[in-house]
Length: 277
Image 1: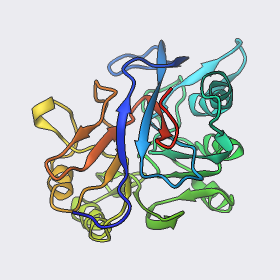
Image 2 (image 1 turned 180 degrees about the vertical axis):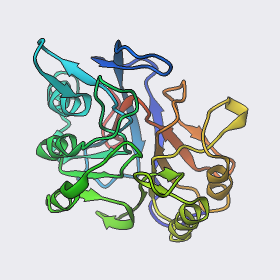
Image 3 (image 1 turned 30 degrees about the vertical axis):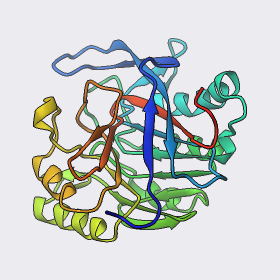
């Protein structure tokens, strides 16, 4: 059992509070189709009183088209929409006193499914509205020379293989996935898993991985070795993506680690010091 700060997601409402329409090329297809990004409201305990809420999302691999000549990354549209959602639905909660957690794969285009590209504009837009933006890269994020530019933004914390302490919280982040090292943000299995173990030995409060663990009992796809390692250490709160899970709820491992898969979803988790909307 971990001593100190204990974060726990208490509840996530079953139905989304809003949707954002977007286009993406689905698996096995060549033509873009319309989808909706659901935005859920939940409640979390253990946050410091000066943090009103946290937003968690991953795999925003879509674009929004408002006319025939221009398209905007889904993540940018989400970041621009969230202040309006706070104003409409979350009276008393300030987005400027909230943190955003981004778990990777924030780029997309409508020419080729699974293409890689630079999502720095998504990060920059989130940084305009949130007090802090903490996140990692997915295997389809390719910042190129802009990565240094991203790291210079004062309220942005890009975690490639790092642990950062903020406002009493230890936050660990591991970018990328297991795979061929000649490709973007991929590591050999033993390197990736050893890095994760080093983080977990430090008893972080929040862990960000792009990969999700594999949970056979729920038929949730992911990495089985990740599951085994998570269960060896003290409980924490894991935010992840990459593999889509057909649920909006958290899953708890036998060691009480809570997992929130945010693939193609958005969660606004309100600090328990306020009543749940």
